[in-house]
Image (cartoon, rainbow, N blue to C red; front, side):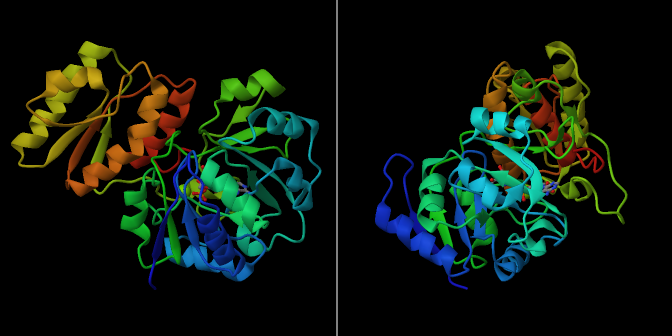
Length: 347
Ligand code: TXA
Ligand code: MG
């Protein structure tokens, strides 16, 4: 397949280009597009065939359900039912934005989209290109992250090109994702809603609006249909081995980083540290990737996937990373780092 690249800038929406991409979606084609979290591969969410194409393009198991993207929350009732008051409140507060709500689906969403589940994830992205595309297409758009299954999600156009050239009809080229980690997925079908995947909207932000929510950190057995089907697959995994150091202060972290890096180096392995700016100078005799200021967890989140992909491009065999406090954005960062370290049972 020949992949066409269309450039659309976030602050300069070109209506003709949006129309071209929207037409492709309506014709059942695959269009990779930017969102504020990560780039996604879009397809018509009302078509079972389009869904199948996504699974093939990503090399993804078909029991892992897709998120349905809408231009407006008010369109949601056409695709989901029994929308609770809490769901309405979350939508009013965080949509458009990096939040996905899992709700009971209607018949028009084919089972191929939801991996056979009777629920579907609904998200209204706030990126200007995504919003314009959805508005123009006038169809719900299923879109998983635009990476090959098992690779870190793409936060920049180059990441998408690396993974999907020749696998999708169109890639919309735009800037780097502002959030950098995927949306928070919250299951609203329980009295106390359950966060299935921490992400761009924090547990604290959600609780401030609707009170108590749970967070699912448990694993699943391979054979059952899991609550958050994505959990059983290895995600965000770099080719090299990621060593996630236990939570500690600066001096202790630095010592542990030096010890690990030195040991790997002596055994002839290519090694690097994926760390906040504060550590870079002290580690200047080693390869490093600067994630940004440690105190600014939003910045760390924004750079994390690029860091993991850079490790692969440089063929790093042993990667060292520090832990972050598991609150606010730290929860999502630690979730992705744990997955990258190969701890499959965490989500
Ligand atoms: O930020 C995002 O959410 C990005 C952008 C492109 O919008 N999309 C994304 O999609 O991350 P994907 O398919 O890579 O991840 C969707 C996650 C998976 O872990 C999946 O298991 C979970 O959401 N999920 C989707 N629908 C679900 C459902 N009905 N029940 C439980 N979990 C669901
Ligand atoms: Mg994904």
